[in-house]
Image (cartoon, rainbow, N blue to C red; front, side):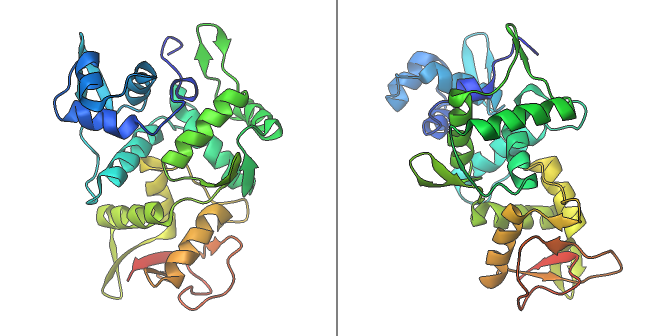
Length: 278
């Protein structure tokens, strides 16, 4: 896979990804057709490369074609984001990492180490991520050798995950590790649709099922060493409970899974191990 491009190099400005994808899905097949349709010229090669590395489009000879969305949640922007994340999740097979796994592995590292705030050129963080890559035997290669982070790659990564709804921009280079609540809400609905159990007459699923579904379909998320949901995800689940969109409940005999850093709250059972939609 060393000849394949690398997302952290390819996508520098993610904003045009959706307009270019939309143009291709509506029948634009060549670069000149896409330029004419979207009026995007600057950086178009990078966007096309990025869409291919995200597995959103393919190319046969000189003709581009769009791949279908994985899900339809009634919102084109979320259809695109969710499908891109799904495709990236397919790169994250423990012990057999795909080349583009960096996008979700970087995010997992921030969640696992409870880094809630970072700057998009923070060398101390991305150098620690490179060290962690060695530990888990994820070693992405180019034709020039091992790929490691630098300021540009980490800034490109930050812009991409901001576009995908995984981090929140505070100002300038400053970001918080706070996934968009709409993303998490969609993920719970899709996971329940896929693997629903009946909890008091309402669709739901165990937290263990949900995390497994997330890893297979959207985000590489595991429980912490003490069996809790990482705080970056738990804070959003708390927000959804507070907004009366979900309940976090005790169901069956499975062990409790705590929400890291979340205070006691009505709608979150003390021995919670499942979630149900409201």
